[in-house]
Image (tube, rainbow, N blue to C red; front, side):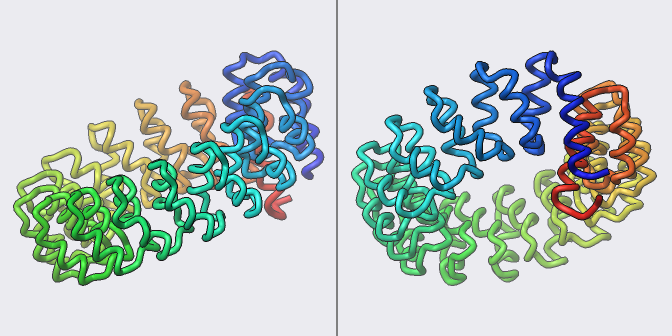
Length: 436
């Protein structure tokens, strides 16, 4: 079966079953599914081109054809042009035309689009509208010289966007370390391109939020993290404890902090030692033990013990841990707690036999996670195609564990929505591989 045959079949299915389907079904299955092929979108436009919701949905869809985007880019309705302006697949020439649109909302969306050319971004950075300038200020492709100019903008939201921009240079960020607006300084503190000099200044900022962001930043020098270790603000110390660059020695000191939130942060840090994990797994506070149970670096022996913890949240965290032993996951799969079984059902390390049983669980939340689990056996997924809850059944064709053979079988299913989703999954695979 080749791509053209699949398209022919899916268009026939669309014409027969979706043309007169309820709007909620059309919206969910076609407009809100990124895998919908452009041919189906073209057909939907052809039969319902006066429906604003259809036009808006197609204009923002990643599979919309260039020809259709060209038409929609000239639509009189702002909401439709808005979709084209923010669409990552919109061609450069259309973005350049929309960059001078009379609506500042459209120009703002163009300014935020990562595919907008630098020449247009430079012009948008000088736009009279502060909303448009803020869009350009946040775009990582905006030329550095323009970001430098925008860092002096009188509007706080524009400078904030520059501070948040991952494309801002250390020199640009340096200009904002003493900004009058706390949110701007906090954003600089979070930016990984900030210099050591900027971190040094911000680590002494009067705002706890700013210092906390310095402590969270993955590029903050170790000497500054060490200085923040004794900060009076518990949030700052907790951020140091969370930072994966924090050394084992610092984590050892923080693991003895009186604040539960800080000990929890240490328990969640991948740099914690086995000794720290063992001690914190016996902490009196359930949130601390929960963090240790969730950490993929926690020793197997500790996870095995925590699987029988009195606190259900701790057991749930063990069930979510991809490094939990399979015998532990088998044990937790039979637990009389929906959220624990749900966590086991989501774990890609859960044994096939357990996933088969969970696929027949009485709670839809559990079955939903089986349907999403890439390790779920095809047999379990095929059983879920007839699930009485559509929220579960609709997920199986998206599961990467579904074989081509299984998807082909689903194209003959009696439920047209399952058939359609099987076809779109096959089309996606056919377009991206030599599966056919």
